[in-house]
Image (tube, rainbow, N blue to C red):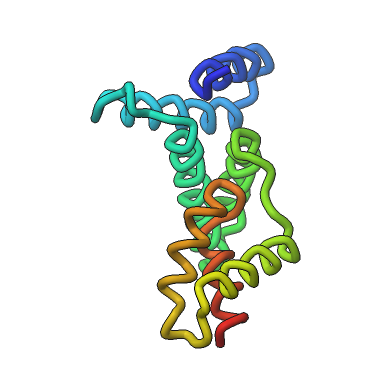
Length: 148
């Protein structure tokens, strides 16, 4: 089942359940999908593109929640984090931190990286191999820790 069909099914369920947070989250995915499909050649819209799109939505909500928490606005951060939980259902299972470290150690040995100067090579390869399994910020933090 494509992401769009899955979202529509969940959207109907959320409407029946009158779940406002789920409705907002699912409508955001639906809107982003429609926008992405109409802005370019829709035949080139792959599963990876769908994952990147949902990851982008999750990142936006996490960033907003972090900003709200910095400003002591837990009342605004909580709905954002609730939406993150709903959006995360449409992502592949995320890697644990230990699995991420092991994967990046392998990538570092493959690229021959020895210092922070080689971070770009490692990040490029890690981002391609681990796309959808974890976010770029987590990859960056682990690469910095291992190379630094």
